[in-house]
Image (tube, rainbow over all chains, first blue to last red; front, side):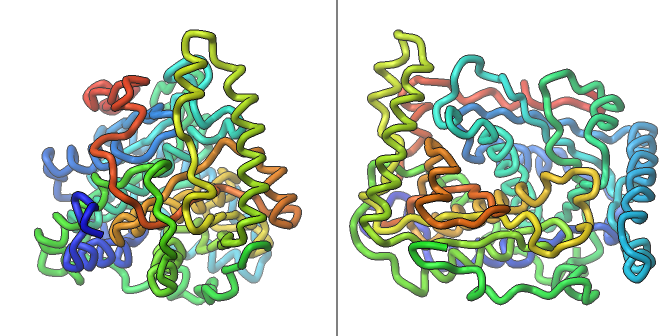
Length: 217
Length: 217
């Protein structure tokens, strides 16, 4: 292993895994305290160093602090959430409704991560057989940012109960740019020990051995 | 910050960022040495602790060690790569062809990460307005695994120049299961300081300030 520069030491590896295993999707625990500019910058830079297909770097970041805009997004969430509740059968509907699923107004800022599908023009190395690779690169950026936030002791919640077209309208996102994630970001009163849906008995953690196949499915 | 348990310390944070910034897409540097079972297990467990929409955990992992199977996948890569080369104009085609874009046979193992789109049946919390969220959860698992590999001083290369339908056929992946990533995983002779396409002058690193918007696009 002597050729590996820089080598990750056991202590650094332990720090990395501690961050990874204690990342949570935060909804209820946001505090109103502002996020330090230098810290926010570190989160965005972590996202910007995600892998991207053909080095396309297709992402943009919209930092949404304006409360009136966030109030409109919250209204869109509420409409999408009402529609969603109707999809669950009666037995689960009330339980669904009782979950807190976003922190749009409680967190001090929203962060929208988008994907510019034609950022570099022409064919893109690695995207010729799988055109969705730019979307996936952008998701890698979201996950980098999420982990970096946990490393900074900040919470992140991904709000996916939103109609992307409405979000584009509210934020003036142009044609050809796909919103991938609306994230709530902020300080938190704490992190749950386990994912909330697991704790609530909605679904169990799957045993990993059931998910591993050898050589073929 | 006293309520945050566990709090990430500055030293742990530094370890995390070191891993994040030194992750690379490995193609040429794989060594044939086998990957330790316990280490491989840690990578899969890191992936399994990615965020997932509605706690769906839609991922499966196929560990491909069999050389005959990997040879078939390599042939599929070569066919897709030939098609891809034709898409570039003459000026860039030779440069494209000269890039080493996979390590399917050099790495000791391939790792396919898939998404089971109907894993939990019924409506999924958080997937009602954005049905692609399960695909994105699986990409988060890939990025967790990629970073964990770097923390273990292992290289990972994402091979996207493959036709997903061919990969499904070769690996016997059932209907309704979407292959998200074919990853080459193994020990490496080293990690590049910068992404190879950046170093080669194919595309520059974008200045991050051009990617940040405030309140609206």
